[in-house]
Amino acid sequence: MWPLKGFRKPLRKRAKGGGSLVYVRYLDHALYRNVAPSDPRPVIRETVGWLVNEDDEVIWIVWDRNVVPDKYERNDPYSSLVIVKRCILEMRRIS
Image (cartoon, rainbow, N blue to C red; front, side):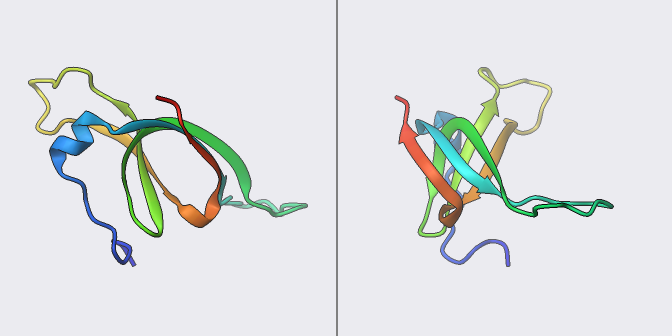
């Protein structure tokens, strides 16, 4: 089912620029492996990062990136997170 309907990959330049800095509190799916959970519920998590892209269903946040491109790496690496909007409890712009 990926990519999600309507989700557009951002332009590389936009990902490098990072977009708005945001705080997001959201429900995260929990994986229980070889454990019987006593109260199975989503976990509340929070993150801070640059809002790179969004559509009607998801947001894409980059939370770690190179400041200066590394000449030994083929790509400009960054760590990111895609969050389903229905799972967002709070989201606010930091800057």
